Amino acid sequence: MAEPALTLDEPLKGDAPLLKRLADVVSLPSSRVNAFERAMIGDLLIEILREATPSERARVSKRLANLTEIPAPLLRLLLRDEIAIAGPLLEDGTSISDLDLVGCVRDATMEHRLMVARRRHLSEVVAEALVESAEPPVIELLLRNENAKMSQATLEMVVAASRENHAYIAGLLRRHELRPSQAYVMFWWSDADCRRLILSRFAVSREVLQEAAGDVFPLASEEGWKDPLVRKALQFIERRQRNRAAIAKSPFGSLDDAINAAEAGMTRDLATEIAYLAGLKPMTGAKLLADPTGEPIAVMCKATGLPRSAIKALWRSMRRPETDSAGEMAPALERTLRIYDMMAVDRAQTVLRYWNWALSSAMTPALMNAIRKGDEEDLDEYSPPQRAAMLALANDFGG
Image (tube, rainbow, N blue to C red; front, side):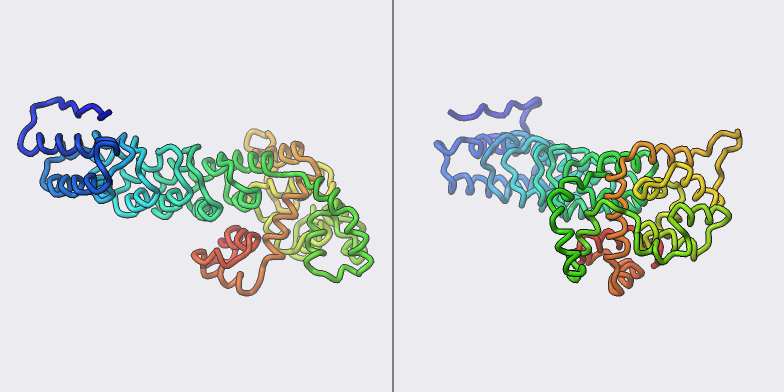
C-alpha cells in the first residue's frame, strides 16, 4: 500500500507540483517501484532540487525522512544541504548508513554534526568521525548521548583532549565504556569532585587476581624472580605495598620515620627515600608529592598503611597551609583527609600501583622524547601504560 502523499501548507508554485509527484513516487514501496526505477527517479529529483528553493527542498527532505529506501545520490545531496533541509533526515532518518553519516560529518557544518551527535544508536565509526572534528560542543553532546557507542580509540582521543578542555571530564566519567586506566590518568587534570568520583568508582579491588595468582608467588620466588614480565605483574597484584628491601637498606627504620623526618622540611633526597620505601619509583613519588591539591598523598598514605597523621606531616613538610583565613582547616587538606577516610587499602593500592606502572615502569627514552615534543598523534604506537604516562607527564617535561 502506498504511503500517504505529502500535504503542503501553502499553494504549490513553480516546480513544486513536480517535486511533490516525484517525491511521492520515489516513496512508493518496493512492490510498486523497483530499484532501477527508484534510482532513475532519484536522479531526476536531484536535477530539479539543484534549482529548487530551500522551502521546496525542505518539503522533499521531510517527505523522505521516514523511508527505508532513498537513492544514495539523493540522500547525499540533501544531507549536505543547509541544516533546515538536512535536519529532518538527520534527526529522524532511518535509512541513513554509517557511510552517509560519516560523509555528512566530514563535509557539512557544525550544525549538522551537532544534529548527528543527538541521533539515537550512533555507531562507533560515526562517533569517531564526530570526535575528529575537535569541536567542543559536538564532543560534549556526543558524550551525553547514552545511546552512542564509542570505541576505546575514540575514548582515548577525548581523554587526551580533556587535558586542555576540562568540560569533557564529567561526560567521560558518565560513559560506561571508560576503563579504569583511562580514568586514572585523567585524574591528574580533574577537579576535586571528579577526582573523588574517579577514586570512588574506578578504584577496583585486586582480590580476584590475588586468589587466582596465589600459587604463582612461591614458584616465582623459587626461580629468583627471573622473568621480568612475571615479576612486574606480581608486583601489581601482591598485597604488600611497602618495599621491604628498600627498608632494609634505608637509614630510616620505616616509612613512618622517613615522613616524620621530612616534617621539618622536604628535600629531594627525602622525597626519593619516601618513594622507595612506599614501593614507588622516584618519578611517581615526585608526581604525587607535587600535586597541588593533595588527593594523591591520601592514596599513598592509605595504600601503605600510614595513619591519618602522616598526611598532616607531609602537608607540613611541603609548607602547605593547614588553615584558612578564618582559622578553619584548609579546604585542600580537608578534601585530602576525606579521600583517605573513604578509600579501602586494597583499592588505594590498585590506584597507586597503576600510577607507578604508568608513570615510571612504562617510561622509556623514546617515550620521554615523545612527551617533550608533545607527540600525541602517534599514541597508537604505545602501550596503555605508556599512553597514560605520555598524557599525565606531558606538562612535567615541557614541550
